[in-house]
Image 1 (cartoon, rainbow over the protein chains, first blue to last red):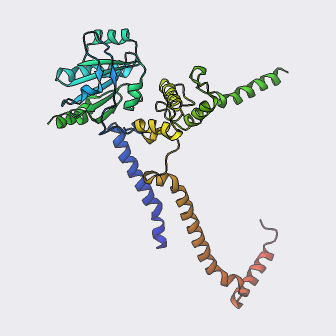
Image 2 (tube, rainbow over the protein chains, first blue to last red):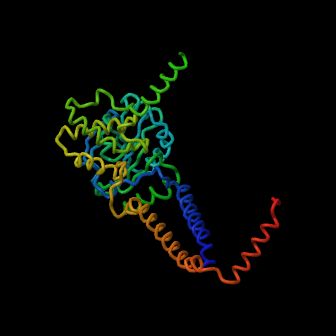
Image 3 (tube, one colour):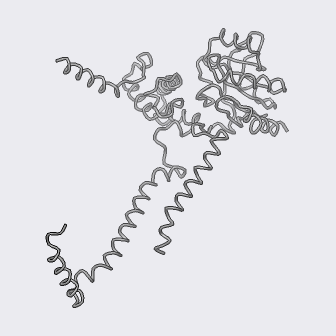
Length: 181
Length: 164
């Protein structure tokens, strides 16, 4: 019994080391401690009706998001560098026929329009949230953030930060396929 | 004199640090009572961008938006709890710098006390057991054998005088 007591630190150490190894793996896959869980998951999108950014396109409203189609809602801004990094992926998704609704967060209309004119517009519709209130209703704490909205208009997934090709393959595309069935 | 002055300047600088706040004059409510409530609440609300500052301390644009939103709710007649619930409905318990006591946070709140109790219990247990073992030999008179050993030791000590 006495002798076994000396094993306690070793066992504690192995347990701790094992836990660190698990967390390091998770962080490696993008599950970092600053990634906050969303309380909006499985809840309907908050009510909003925002004016269009691009002339000739409609704005984005919550009522239009529950019409039986799976969609992405992407919060972005012209002043946001990670949004530029994410942009080619959104273009590719749009090319594959994914319906993406953009919300230009706290931006000048001219700046937002200029970026879309220069880099291309992946959005089926894109609106301006100049007060940032709709973003707060979604629980956004920084752009870019992307939400997967199911057929009934409920939020099913939140991507914090730019969508990486890995996020796309392992989480977002499989979820879209599953929800579209 | 210069040294005194620079010392005073440094002291003023150091002391003024913690009193600086991010709240801008244009955000403040005209009603001092409501403003005081808003300040009190925002000290316990986390800025989600900086994550370890309260929205009262943070200069982040989102913190400003949340401060304004909080004041709007209070002006509309929300109670403190309702105004805070408005934010936790969107951002979860994470916006609260003081985590609420609920099963998921029991370990956080009561863990340290549990450890303290466990440590205390182990100390008590060990102390009592050690005492029981040691008590008898300490109070009993020396046996003949022990007396002989002691005599040898005392003699050795005398012979060893002068040695280090």
